[in-house]
View 1 (cartoon, rainbow over the protein chains, first blue to last red):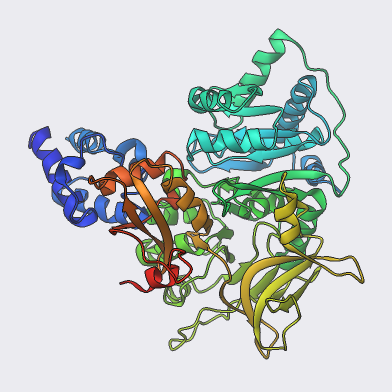
View 2 (spheres, rainbow over the protein chains, first blue to last red):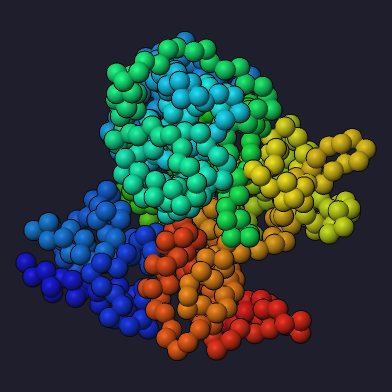
Length: 84
Length: 520
């Protein structure tokens, strides 16, 4: 299992390239709200979940697709980590 | 008959049958319990001085506790005012303060921020606090807790008059703050009765509740199944936008009547893998709130061909006022959306030009509606209310001006053409572009703001903001979106932000929206 910092960087790179083109990477922190600030809308969230499942070989359950699990890079990394 | 009485015969005849089931699996409530719990809420509210004509706020996640609360409020003769539990606390506090709620039923998780915001606006109303929601149990506990402090003697259920206020639903306001649409028992019951006549619900039906309670689709969701002794399945919020989970829920729980905005149906068609599941119990799919892109409607119908599909149209101010049944096979070569249909049997319609004169048959004009569904007006906005109606001097009849441009086709169905103002629909929700602009102007760095909408097949509209700033430092996209999320519900947060030195102007020095609209 790769370490948390590496997981966060992978997630951050994906979000910046797919959903925040041209944005200063320093603006995207571990705690930037993604879903609740409209950075990830419904379709973007589905695409992102698909990426997480493919890249980390994990399964994300339906109830894990809401802001409680996916709203920040911190929470997403914790979710990925919890999948062992 | 008043809304609260729609439940009575079902409580008698369907006592131990499930009335409301939470799709999260947390809980369910049968008809007898729903009746009893709403009676207890009624009694508690009565001891807090709530009676006919008062307003009571609801700030809960969608739940059986919420449904029981709604009926409890109605049973006092008061009107309920639901708010979006995902919206900023400031917005919800504004809404409840605006209509002067006497009491609010609020979930603990929202209490602190909500109280802080209310305190900025004036006296804080009394609250009934629920530690959580689910299955009605938390409402039961909250009421029992209050009873140990002071008992709430049973009072009779109010016999609301037809024109008594039943609920106020707040929608996006063009001037910057949401506005409250006042709906009476007559408005709601005439709509529910039309649903009974048109869709012929059965006690064996399972209705979905996908829409939140502050959205007018919830009126059909809540009252039609409960009137007929059917079952209402509350779709959990986390599954509500997740097509695979939703497809599973629909099929596992044998949902027979589905009602939602088209955007979630488009997602289901694209990502839900419905043909892999048994949806044979699904017999009707109703959709409303925005245009359903034909490509996704066709795809959905190919995957789930057996239900009847209905396009329902109507603003919050009238609820559903026209309807159209989609043919059983959407042709491959059809590219235009289907019509919004003909007026409901109990309503009247007319199409007028900008001078409020009826247009020739087939010509484009603004659709206006009269009849028992039509709202009373906007809360505390007499001018706005007056502007939104045409008054027939001869009959005294009020026609609500929908702001939607339509044209009548030769078969009598109305074809939707577009809006005549700055309102768009996003995922079925009303979005006033002016409200977004007002929010942006609150940001210290923003000098000018102009919001335009671009068509988008998936969401209905993409909201693009054109900005010019004060000073040198341009706020980041993340900063702008986060700022908006503090003032607006998530569906109103703009999709695209474009910065300019200054915004283009017309010859009269107003912002040139046309030029901005045409920019790539």
